[in-house]
Length: 212
Image (cartoon, rainbow, N blue to C red; front, top):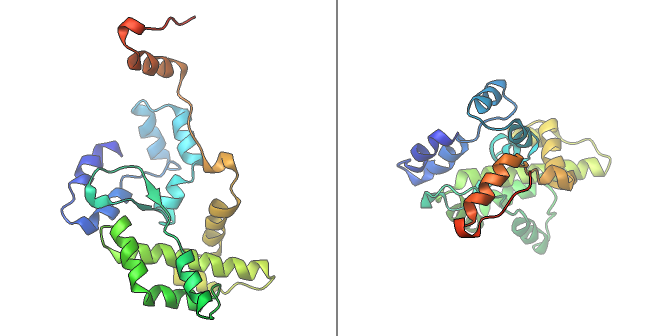
């Protein structure tokens, strides 16, 4: 929602900026959003690309991806999924099972330094969204290990992060199984739009002739 960007950037408390940025993302599956986009002159191809893109799911639906330094208030569309590997490596190096859900959740809670460090990068110091993202990654890791071993996944693992099996499977598909054209969904500009962009970028004295 481009009309709310300025208000989001002016959010008073730095630790509220992450949530303010989340609210800017509208669900491209919603009919009302699609209608509003059409009325605003946004090409249908762009709306369809937004619907197929993993961006909304990773940022808003699953809340895995986090923004880079929101406290700068520049609102860049640069989002990262925090790494779980440092925590699994600590568990493995100390002789614990780095795939076990209990170990992973416990390590996330007790290893404050990695959490606080990541929070300074992604959420202006707010640890809660970082913990939420890492716990969902941990739940997915433990759930999929059970699946791959032919075991019955513990539904309590998904429930702990307020998800169900379908949500865990969707996260796994987006992060591990999605093909190139599912990961990188870039809408093509209409020919007229592309021409206008090109002409605007080239000085008048160096204008290019276009064959119609």
